[in-house]
Length: 294
Image (cartoon, rainbow, N blue to C red; front, side, top):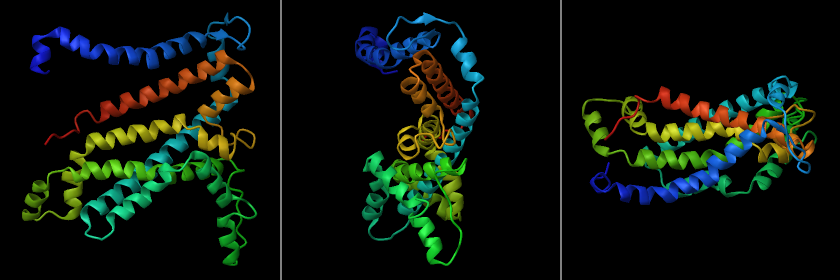
């Protein structure tokens, strides 16, 4: 701890108080309210009635929950592998290669991130269209009879959506990882080169350990987003057809605005919070001893 704060505890309290108050107002109080409301039955108009664990019993016996959890897990895994895998690869290439136009490539990869969700969703809807979509049209141009209804089938629909979401956000993670790699002291690479280390050995034994905190943060953001994803799914399929592309966030939305079951929707929200917090704690526990300081 800073010597100033060690000698003057009041200074620590003064500087921390605004942050704690903001955190309480934005995070803790809304979470506490949602937790309390998850034990009630409320339609948004009449007075809320306490129902105990009824909402949670309905939630854990709902057939939509299994589909939502499966789709959310598929979304999380695919999103994380795509964004971190390809983002890490592109970041490594941009840091270590001597190609011209690095700024152009960085801007090009990041461009989808600045596009609005609705623009990206409409773009990929046109790509996936069963009759006039780019993918099916390319298959027809090659003389193939292979056709796919990308957004209208189980599993395939959620993978099609997460592919669009992954394309949109990959550049964001790539730039974060690029900055982390760029800040690794070059002296480590120079010393390892003298010792005869290959590029792969440098990447595995120097780059990855030294950017581990950044990589961990990107992993948590990408993986938990799969359980919080909403906009892209809602615009592209609205969770349908039927419940083929349901996720926990779509399930929450349908409960809240479709059925006006505010208590049940809060129970779904609490489940999302528990899952995301659990993922964060697990990642922190697994990577606790992986951080290397330089």
